[in-house]
Image (cartoon, rainbow, N blue to C red; front, side, top):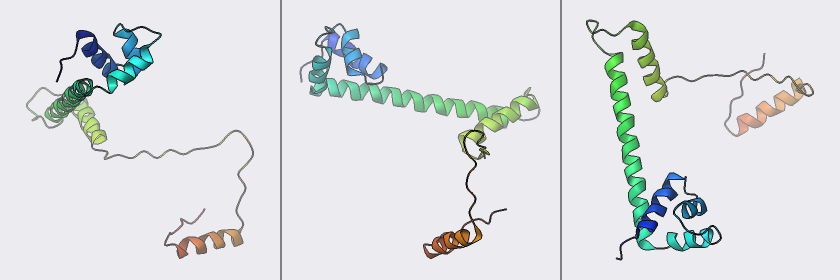
Length: 146
């Protein structure tokens, strides 16, 4: 397989760095602005260019995974440090909070109140009963209104 030129390698790096914007990567790699889109398409069809992009994406994915693991490890050290270590309670609590968020242990509920536009129409008792009956026929249970 033929080797990539420096310009092609630079295109691959810029393509990944720019969020896979092929025209921008081609122009930044030194290809003409007029032909950037067509040159980028041709480059992306080359086996060696695809392989280089895959290699770069793999490096990024590996780095992100390693960084996330290191962050989690650091938070665990703070959160579960022995009392004899010089970790104050606010740091310990913040580390526990961040670990909980990472593990999706907390769910936030937001109340949405509409302040613009017309009032939402209210459902009558007959209509509500029809909805409950229809829902129960398909196996759903509706919460009772207040």
